[in-house]
Structure formats: C-alpha cells, structure tokens
Length: 77
Image (cartoon, rainbow, N blue to C red; front, side):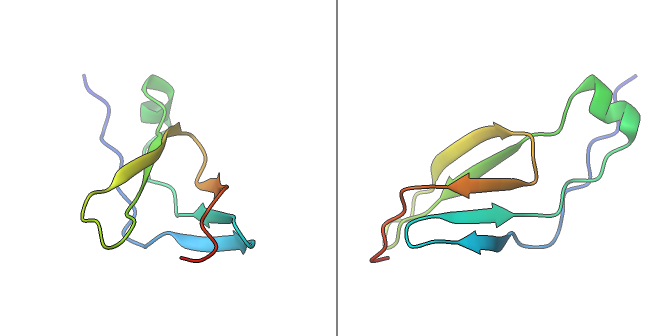
C-alpha cells in the first residue's frame, strides 16, 4: 500500500523577514496524512531565477521546514 501523496499548497511563498542582502521566505506547508509523513517526510526545493535569464537555479534541496533563510543576495537587484 502506498501513502497518499501530499496536497501541494496553492498559495505563493511570502517574505517574512527582509534585510539589506538577506530574506526569509515562507510558505504554507503541503497537507498530508500523519501516516504518510512517517513513511516519507515532506521536503521542499527552493529555486531562483535571475532575470533576464530564463533558467531556474536550485538554491536549496530537502528543506524540511516551511521557511528558508536566503543569505548573500545582491542588494542592487
């Protein structure tokens, strides 16, 4: 028997803290039954796009929390 896949959040991530060259992003966690979380914990992947480029680059993988602190941002962007 396979666990029920998590229901992905539909809301966009939001900024909870902002500094001159840092930011903390947060999001509503994915919904999953407790039993499914015990079999395979829910993790998130954070990607960024630096315009005008079209490609997205990974910033972090296997994030277990529903927020992430991003350091060393370019203050002129």
